[in-house]
Amino acid sequence: GDYLSTAATNGRHNYVLELSSDIDSNAQNVSGNFPLRGETFEIAAVSAGIITTTYRSTTPTQIDVNDNDALIGKWEFSVDSVEDQTFYSVTLKNAGTASDGDFVDIFVRRTDGTALTDTVSQTVGDYVTLTFDPPFTVLEGDKITLEAVADIVDGAADTIQLTFEEANDVFSVGSLYG
Image 1 (cartoon, rainbow, N blue to C red):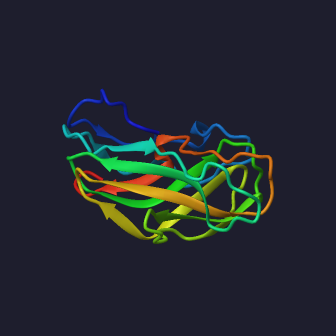
Image 2 (tube, helix red, strand yellow):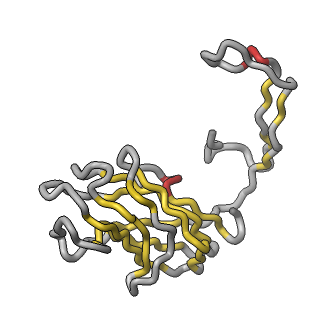
């Protein structure tokens, strides 16, 4: 779980499972060496860096079946002036009507066409996770515009709308505070 932003500064926190009965599960049996104790974390009085995501429009807005490397999503990551951010992966959700398999060979590139991620064959349950290879860093106070592209193989009357559903769909690590 996440710690609340109101957690006391210098407070020390960890997770402990004292007994197997502390685990609420439908498993027939829970076993292990109890108690289980996680790492201890201390709350610091710092503000970590923030990444702001802004969706950008795609051109052309109409793509066709058999288009290769079609632009299906575009967004800008802006990094505040607290710390550099190194990006490791993104998870995108298709909120449009296109089905898994309608668009394939999905990857993320820079606007100059340089591929930044691995290529994933297709979405699964409308989701795709793309890993930056290698991870890349955006300096504090800077921004970068990225594009998702794919080959369109089916779904002529459908739409593709890529979104970030949760804040943790963007996996990055700050240079100072993590």
